[in-house]
Each structure stands twice: as structure tokens, then as C-alpha cells.
Length: 465
Image (cartoon, rainbow, N blue to C red):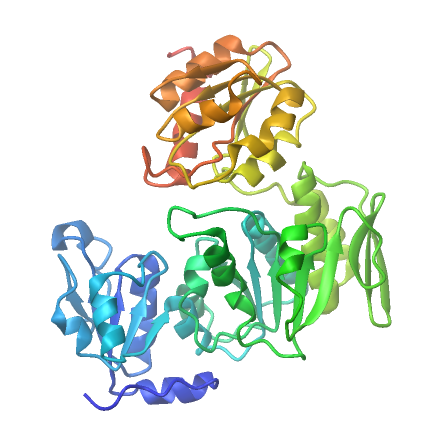
């Protein structure tokens, strides 16, 4: 093993250095598996290491190229016999093997960082506490109408590495990036970055809100005055952190007319930037809720700034139906509509969900506590919620915050919560699953929780409960 890599701002130079080098990849999930293949194609000697057993990983790793070595059941000292260690987003930098790597001064980079070396196309990176997935998807739809080869990936569910394996020469890379991914960037350089908003999130992982914000704003680390930051001008918390930044600032707003930036004028999106003054009438918008007006506003601004025709923005506004588990209608029983917003894992996302309905709401909330301020949503609860049923590990703390504000009940399972909510709801009401918590106390992820909710509603429709 030679000296550690000298990681450069030039992706091609980093790829050239990988030839013959030993690289350890931690985490054999989809991100780890796909970045291991990119590294192998660049000529690196790759070790893929995971805590899970051979039996657990056998099916998913069956199609890996033979030269990629696989280590299961834990991270051994072999991991440290490397010029570079690459981490998957879910791997904490505090685990023992990475602390040892830091002591040995072995470079550590995330999957997002390494994948970025393999493209010369502009990167548009979208982060924030809420809305980043839908904003990424909307932006991708708008760009794909104009440009043939556009990668839409990252934290949205398609790892950047895997998308580059399928499309090695994209025209644009549109990426959702999480705070976990941004912890491990070194040279990652977006041409445009978006911060949708900032609110308390992942405080089960970060020691405090400041640490979480620092991770999010790491997106600006390598940006220059030639780059562009789109940010939410209505978010007072976010604005405090943007006083001294290098990229040009492009604000967006639902609440104010901007001399430079993007905003709504009635049903028209207005985009002003330098000499540009674009008006995009939106006669019909399929997505509901104020948060989706933000999401479309950002996607439209990015499209116009990067040369997309106005008509494609209008087309996407009229046709984009949203993503699963995000204000997703999943059925109606006896005049009661059921809405799956399992992705609402923060108090702010619960706020957006409650603002999206005029009908009375019977709310299902709870899960694994992420440290949010449940008191913050009390005024909306009083205004819009008929009753709420709480479940999961966070239920006692939510009950303490909401007691006396709306009729409350606690239960031990999502199944019982759906039954109670249905019995309490009246025709014309909405039963809303918007947990304001993560799912990890009872489910693998928010998707499994949402799928279970969908199945429970189907059972009600079929009369099988």
C-alpha cells in the first residue's frame, strides 16, 4: 500500500489515482454496492465490508464482479489496509473502525463524494429539512422534458453511483442530498444548490440543532461566486446562517415579492434574475398544500435558469401526481378519505400536512422520537384536527405536548390506530397518517410504515377487519 490518496478538486485526477489502489467500502446496501462497482471500473482493488451476515447479504451481492472482495459479519482490520475508505450514508463517522482510520490519516469519503468524481456535467444539489425529495423529483421531471439525459438520484432513492453506472454521460445531475451524505464530502461541488428550509431534525443523531445545520450547510463548502444558492426567503432560521457565503444568492418566497428571485403572484410564478423577468401562469396544479407551492416554485426557477422552456414547467405542474407516502390518497371508506403521509417525519412536515386540508382531520401520529418540538403545531391542531391517536415510542411526549388541546387517545400499534381513527371520523373527514416521527421503533423505514397503512385501509374497504 502506497501513501494515501491526495484527493483533488478534479474528478478525473482522482479517478486516475484510483488505479491499483486499495479502497474499502463500508456498508453493502445499494449505495455501497454501486459505488464499489464504480471504483472497480476505475481500476481500484475494492473491499466491501458490512456488519450483516453472509446469509443476509447473499442475494443482493450475487451479481457483484468477482474481483470485489466481500467481508461480512463486521469490519475487520482489513478495512484499514486501504488508501481510501468510502462510507454509505447510513454509516456513522463515530464507529470504532472509522475512528481508527482517522488516527491513521486514511482519507474517508462518502458515496456521494466519490460518485461526483465520475461526471463533468453540472450538479444541482437539493437539501433541507422538508420538501427536498418532491422538489428533486419535480425538477427532474421539468429537466427531462427539455434534455434527453438527466440523472435524478441521491437520497431520493437512486444512489448517484448507480445512476452513473446506467448513464455515464448525463447532461445534468439533479440530486437530493441529506445531512448524512454531506458529512462526508471533500470536493463535491454543485453548480446550483437549494436549501428548502431548516427545522429541528435528526436530533437523535446530532448533539444539537447547530450541529445538524452545519452538516446541511456543508453543501456550500466548495461553491464559488460563479455558483448559485437558491434559498427560502420566508425561513428566518435559515436566513441567519447565510450572511457570509460565497455563491450568488437566489431567494424564493410565497410571502413576498422579490426584486431578484422567484415568487408567486396569484396563480403565476414570477422569476427575476439579472435581466430575466419570466412569468409562468399555472392554471392548474395537481399537488396540494403550501409546501408543494414552494416545491414547484424552486423546480420552476431551476428549470428557467438552466434553459428549460416555460411550457414544460406548466406541463409538470398539471400532471405531476406526487410521490408515494407524501400526502398520498389511499382510499375512501363510508365517506372518510385516508391520506398516507408517512414521509412526514418531522414536526414541520406535519405542519405542512395539516395546512393541506380544509376538511376536519383525524390525525394518526407517533413513532421514534427525533427530538422535535411538538408544542409548535398546537395552534393548527386546535384549528383543524377533530381528534388524534398516538402510537409508538414518542407517544408519551407527544401526549404531554398536546394534552387538553384536542381529544387524544394512545395505542400500541398502527393497526389499532387506524381502527380508532375510522371509528372517530365522520363522513367528509380526512384520516391523516402524518407521524412527525421516524419509523424505526416499529418499521424498517417510512415506506414500510406507509405500505402497512395502505394495506390496513384496503382491509377496511374490503370489510376484512
